[in-house]
Every structure is written in C-alpha cells, then in structure tokens.
Length: 141
Image 1 (cartoon, rainbow, N blue to C red):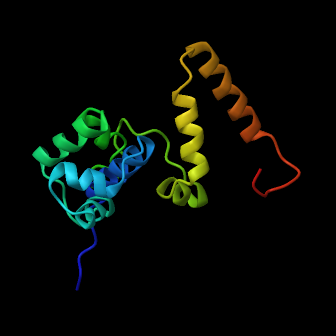
Image 2: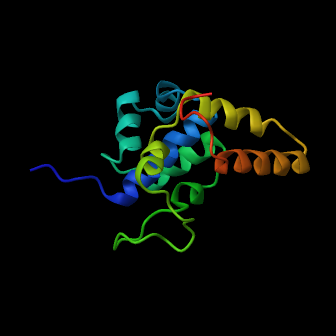
C-alpha cells in the first residue's frame, strides 16, 4: 500500500511550483541547476519526494526567495492550519489554488512589473471590487 505524501511536503512542493512558474523557470532548467532530472523536480512539487534542507536552500536561492517562503501557510503536523496561514479557500477555490492558469500567471507577472505602490493598491481594490460584484455571466472574460 502506497503512503500518501505528507501535507507539509505537498505544501512546500506546491510553493516551489508556484514560485517556479511565476519567475518563468522550467522544471528542466531548475533540475539542471540542481543537478537532478526534471522528473525529480516533478516529485518534489507533488510532495512525493521530500526536499532536503540543503536542496531547499538551493531552490530558494535560484528562485529568489527566502527558505521561509516555502513554509508560509503550511499545515501543522496535526493537520491544522499554521498561525501564519491566511484563511484558506475551500471547494473550487482551493482546487483552483493548486493549478494556476496561464492567465493567472500573466496577471501576476504584469502586476509585479508595476513599480508604483499606490497604483498597485488601487488595482488590488479594483480587482477585489470586481470579484465581489455579481456578474451577468459566469464564463471567462
């Protein structure tokens, strides 16, 4: 009987995947930099294989984040959310969090290029307002 991946390993792997996609690094490129295959990167990202502390440090350096980034919002060992976790989405929103679309990444990349913090805050307010406004269609824009 195959054991399911540990929730913390899955969370860390998911954070590696999201960050890798946000900075536009392929699994192959990350694997080459670490001296492993892209299949190993896939296993890390799924939580199937645990990432050692030294390897996680290498990944953090390559992706330009502190190691702590990968643990933000990670569940505790008893399965409850950590204190630093924001309210987690449920249902469809939680499933969507696992699989970012190309549009999600495009929006985030464009947003990251905006240097004016006041403008960024205004855009966030606008998007939040649009997200809470009932729309006449449920389809994609």
